[in-house]
Length: 262
Image (tube, rainbow, N blue to C red; front, side):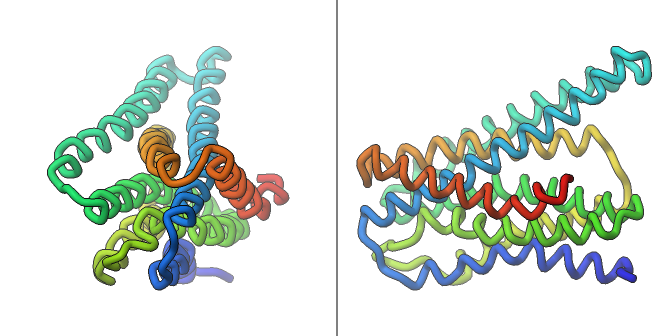
């Protein structure tokens, strides 16, 4: 029987599979390859965007339906909607503020790309917090098998997310410091573990919707940034090919959860 300590350890493993993308930093690549990597990462993030927005909207609409059926109050339904839009706005405007304040003053391709990698890590970290909440809440509800299945699926997802975080800094002439690489991967992966702890303690539909929409807003902003960079490195056909492969990887890593009927 899986106990509480076991579920926390497995939650940590699910989050830190993101570090499997670390070997990407070792290799030197051409501008065309960097463009393809950006496109591939953008495709993975696009899949995550669709996933998190669909989940947050589904949770919101469930409470709206319950309100229309007289099974819950209007305050709950309205609060869900407000937190959904607030999370989206905060994700978009938060990273926009970050870019205006910190990126414009840092000249040079390496500095810009490092900042972009940090932005991606922040967006994915918000997404992974919601995944950790799902793991913890499943365990708290007594659905241990579901929690284990989520850990497997999210662990697979996080492997590709590490690739997305590191894509902007792959192939730089001056390799980034290992401490920086480890830091941004930690920002992206650790929230899965912390979310598992929080989710096992309590459940809040509003918090669930808020964190998903926050991740969605951040991912929209990051995808746009990566598109602008990638299109300067490769032609449109190659970028769209990379985008397609990234989307395909997202769907394939999600398959284990989809086939379970969850």
